[in-house]
Length: 358
Image 1 (cartoon, one colour):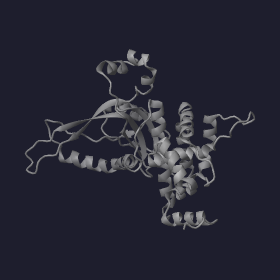
Image 2 (cartoon, one colour):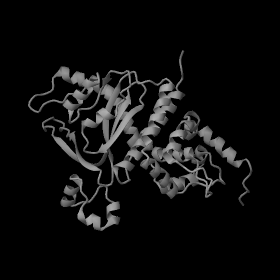
Image 3 (cartoon, one colour):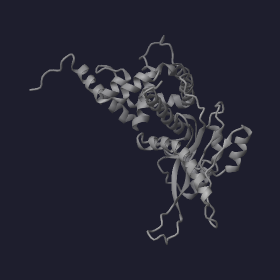
Image 4 (cartoon, helix red, strand yellow):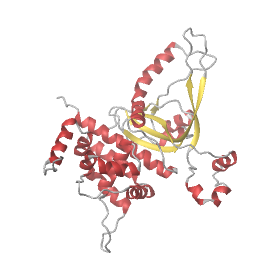
């Protein structure tokens, strides 16, 4: 026969969670969540409650729900279930067993309000300002790169694809509003090239393999010294290197950036020359001429620097499971922006937990 739950059972369970190493407890203790309250209030524009009605959930608590979704790749329905089920999530949000948990529709509406107000950029900038005050200055240079964030593929005809590229809405979709709402007209196709490996004897020549990808592209500028994302931009997957100039921090005292080889390399060089920034590119070999030994060594030195930004994207895709399931670039910007902000939060916790030597 099961015994009745005691008054201190929940506290004992929390103690055991802390002893096991709850990462959300550290995140909740280190991050100054109140710095987000002012930009959230500006974006939501809630009433003072004088007319009555059900009081809304705390804005900072709802923002922390979005952080949980970004860290654990949770949909709105899964977020509602996990908030009801997991004690670690309840403690992170400051909820008790008897408190009301926001449902999936409430979470969606909160995120939609932030999307309409373009508030994620302000929230990201607010925390970046806190990093600067805490002493994490981007003085070691910035590494600029981009990664493709996959989205559900659209099964469109050739005529529909032509209309989308021309910025038009297909006639058939206009007649069916329900179908139009389910079509993402901002995501784009692109082709990634990779090298095929040669056989054991080395007789087979390496050839480029074209891998198609559909979705959006997360352009990010990484602080080389501390590993924080300092700036970001979201475009379709076919976005070129021109978007790099809008995502790195112009106020940084650093003088050097190290992106991957872009399509619009000359335009990027001209843009960085105007801002007195020294770009460093990884050089590709030509088909008719093999890469020299000096060029290979130079690329090796640059690749060691470039690895920092690859680690950021790898964590977002592997541990955080970054994937865009929304429709439209505005909502995708909110989704990817929250992933970038959530990464900075966990990175800040890691830096604060390091042992300081005199």
